[in-house]
Length: 393
Image 1: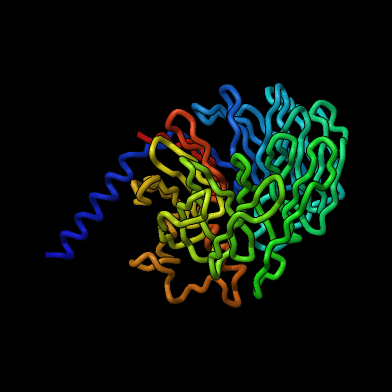
Image 2: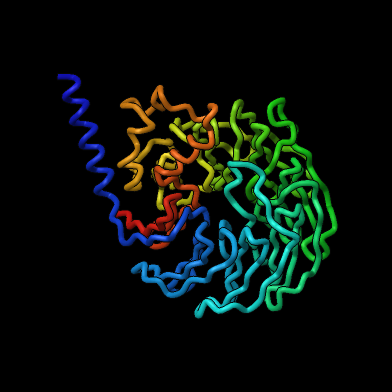
C-alpha cells in the first residue's frame, strides 16, 4: 500500500509539474546551443554551435534570418541600436544589422582555442558607453568601438579569457584561465588590481571560466579551485570565500534579495547564500552539473542542468516547485540514471571513456544556456540544438 501511495503521489506530482508548463514553440538548429538569448523588440537572438547566429520571432519561433560564420557561435549576443554583436570560434567578433542580418564589420583577434572538454563558452561582448568589451582565446581582453569595430585598447593576461566582462562604473572586472581576476580601467585598459585565486592540489591554477556578479562594492565569482570568492571592488581584497570541496564552480552567481544563487559542477548542488557573508541559507541536491546562470520568475529561481531539466525552485526554501524536461532527456534518461535518480552502475562519468560519457550526458539535451524570462515565458537552448519558448502558468 505504501508503494502504491508513493507511486500515486509521484504521478500526481509529475502531472502537476507538467501542467504548469506549456511549450509555445521549439526551434531546431544544427548543433548545441550554449549561447544565452537576448531579446530586442519582437525578436530573440541566439547563437549555435552550427556556426550560425539566429534571429527568430519571440512569439512564434519563425526564422527571420541567420548569419553563418566559420566557427561555433558559443557566445551570447549584445545589442546596441541597430547592431547585434557576437563572437565565434573562428576568432572574429561580428557586428550585424539586427533587422536584416547583414554584415556591418568584423574584428579579428589573434585566434580562438579551447582549454579543455568542459570549456563550453566563449566570452560574450558586453557594451558599455559605446564600447564593446570581451575576452579571447588569445589570452587578451579587448575594447573596440561598437560603431566601427576599431580597437580602443587591449590587455594581455596569461591565460585564455572566456569569461564575459562585468562592470562597476568605469571599472571592468573579468577572470582568466590563468587563475587571476582582473580589475581594469574601462577607458584605458590599465590594470587597477588583480587577485590570484588560491588554487587546489588538483587544480592549482584556479581557473576562472565565466562572468562575475557585481553588486554595490562586491564582486563574486566561482573558480575551478573549488571556491566561490567575494572581493572588494575598490581594493581587490577578499571579503569571504566558500570552499566547495571536490567541485568546480563555473556558473555566474545570481542575486536576489541580498542572496546569491549558484550551482556547482561536480558535487551537483545548487546553493542559496548570503551575499554579505557567504553563509549558506539552503542547499538543493541535484544529480548533475549546473553551469548556467539562474533567473527569477515571481518567487521562483529558474535554472538549467546538464540532466536536461529546467528547475523552478522556491527562492526562500529551496524546494522544487516544478521541472521541465527536454524530450531527449525523457527518452534517454534511463540509459544513464537508475530508478533512484543516481547514475547507473554501468555508467562512469570520469572514467577511461570520459569523452564518450560527456557525449552521452550532452545527448540528454543538457541545458547550459542561461534562461531568459519575459512575460512568464522562459527562453533557453539545449545541447541537442533545440531552442525553447516555454510558457509558465
